[in-house]
Length: 263
Image 1 (spheres, rainbow, N blue to C red):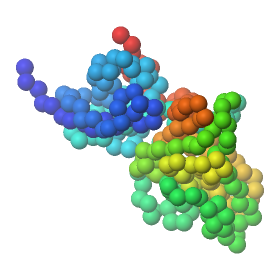
Image 2: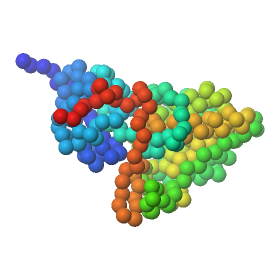
Image 3: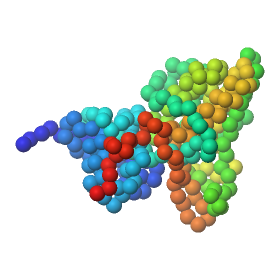
Image 4: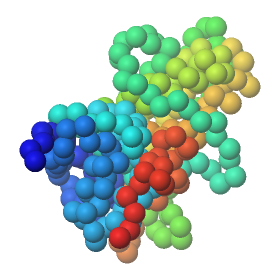
């Protein structure tokens, strides 16, 4: 019996590149196939790495998707392992809505985001965020330390699903402004190789009141580390590994019932 075929582009990220290959792959599926059916096809084709597809999230055209979503010809499907960092142990982070891709200019200067491979000039970024009406500017400056989990760190490498990461960061900034009534949010994240002591992520929140600025800044970094598709590879004196992430918040990861399972 003949049936129509469609092709989707599958792109693995982070540690999944090491297990499934670093290049995007075109996968043929019957028309009307779902994300869950795609994962099942990938499971069958990469039986040696079945576990690598557990606990992941999936994006379709740079937006988070669930297993029931129907795929279409030419869709770009991202396979996303848990993002680097997770949330601080013991912290409870309110869930953020997944971001849609939004017009870069529609937020004006109230939300400023950037992904860059150049060193971040924290002083310049903070100065640019300040206005006369602000009573507080709270800054989170995440820097590369020289050790992790008892091992000496030589350097880090960050990679991102850049289009999706930019959309997620922009939406987090907008949610923070609405949730905490702060005036302005800036988020800048480095990509590529970072040396010890360099800034990896800078978050600046400007507000009339310090309490709102503190709360918004904490929420932003905790949530960014849970849902924004950026991954960290740590190079130690004795080897290199992708930093483990914590499980995706409910509603973003592929549900257990939808995930491919071991044969």
